[in-house]
Image (cartoon, rainbow, N blue to C red; front, side):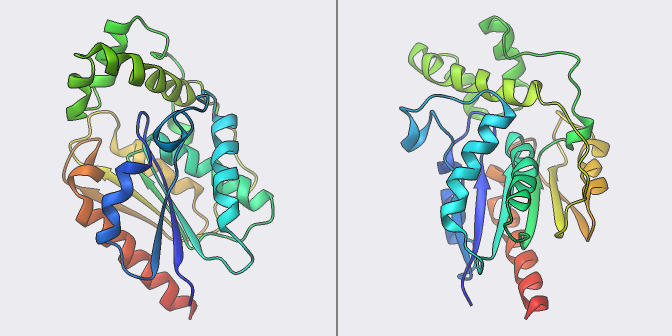
Length: 242
């Protein structure tokens, strides 16, 4: 049996490298496929995307070369990545690709619960910094202390925040046709339990919730635990299919 490709989409300001360390924890039947977004990592020379349509189109074009009629795959997205994963799923299905083995929505507010009452992506630097630091990334405060890092990372963060903050939810005609899992950090102050539980209304099959230790970036703090959930979930699904 071919390996299940696990496409991993990063959070705002992140790149494919945030997932590299997962490789040593995932089972041999899972192929780790971190997605690099434009303007960072090995795509640093490319223009940033700042709208959900353009970023989903970009990720779609990155994914489809790895897929054929027999390909088994799953999608994992954290925070902004969960929103991209949701829209990517529908773009793949609409274009005739088979259902994923599983969808993982991690640390992200369900799309119908995202409010557009205020935006921060265009705020002056000091105010924007305050918004970024609310997410609790340890390296964020250090980034704002170095002008070179500010010049590099702030445009990426502003573009990513704009993707999320200008997102307009449109109800889909069909619910998601594969099993789904939502993961969240119990110390995450950026969302409520209802925000993460809200993913369940999109499920046409099994929907599971997993609470992990840590804050918004629990995937960096609980790498082994998250990997075990992925391993167990995909293994059970593939065993059932066999």
